Length: 438
Image 1 (cartoon, one colour):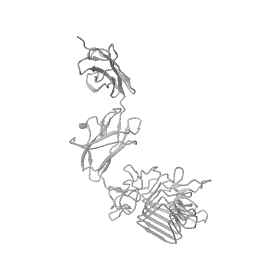
Image 2 (cartoon, one colour):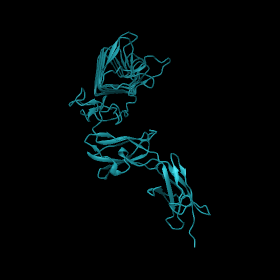
Image 3 (tube, one colour):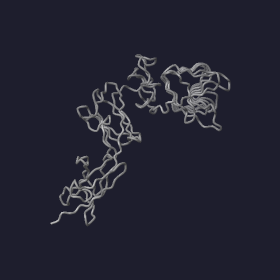
Image 4 (tube, helix red, strand yellow):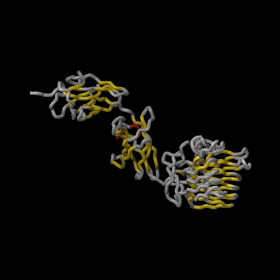
């Protein structure tokens, strides 16, 4: 609901507030905080505060103390503290995800605009922000994750925290300051009583907390209702990825590092039995889950033939690829670079008439007369033969037997054929075939 311009919060205003397994979303206040305000204590467990809008703080404006455990704070908006204003006392955030809250523009922009504001410069009062197994993201570009409003305020990192922009004074050896994008999927039903934001397989938050650590021990439960840990470790933040047996990775171009979209990824057993397939996205990423424990090999293939087909570990052939052993619950990364293969291309026409010839077989051989590749001309006589940089000899053959076969350029055999050399750009090699008459 919206409280308008009165003194109350958009959702809850009280001296003391306790929230468990609840959703506080879509509330607004034109005077104070969009979500919860309390003069004394606020305790939040297993809950989500999302998409609330306030005039001072987006989600929470705390008084003497604040405690959040296994809680997600996402998508809230305010001109000062987009997520939390911890004005005095202590704010303890444990296994909490604070992400993608937005610092609203004002004229002028408040110099203390942040995701979490610690202390109150107007009062003035000092506050302490204590973090454990928590991620704090910046409140939009150029707006810090954490700001200390007074000289006496501070942030204390206990262990296994992360922030996006290195503004939360994360100095514990287990911390991950300034990780940038945490790779969180959008707010969704991932199990449990409330929505959460799971780290993706590529997230730096994934499995960072070792099994047995505080909030990552048998008996602990994540916000999305999973027993901890699910994998070799626990995720930083409120939600845990479910255990999965999978292979995943990113495909890039050799040399440039550019992500390759549309690459076919095929997973096979070490006995060469097909298991699963997928295609890389615009970011070059792929993921194949639901695997049984075992040994696998992965083929990467560019349907456009602009990049050389390759197996995991940059092996050229299936037999040369090292098996990837996947145990139950393993999510193993298998990145791969693929070499750009420039094309030898051209048009095959009929001698005398210039008529394009479709269906002509074009074969390439090395100077040692080793076969390396073949293709067939299209109906308009054009072809493109993608090969690694090198020097080759080409032979053009009409399988219908109506034209005389020839080697490039208009030579009768391999020994006299003109070699074609290409390096990093398309090389043109046209041919004219003489019709067989009489």
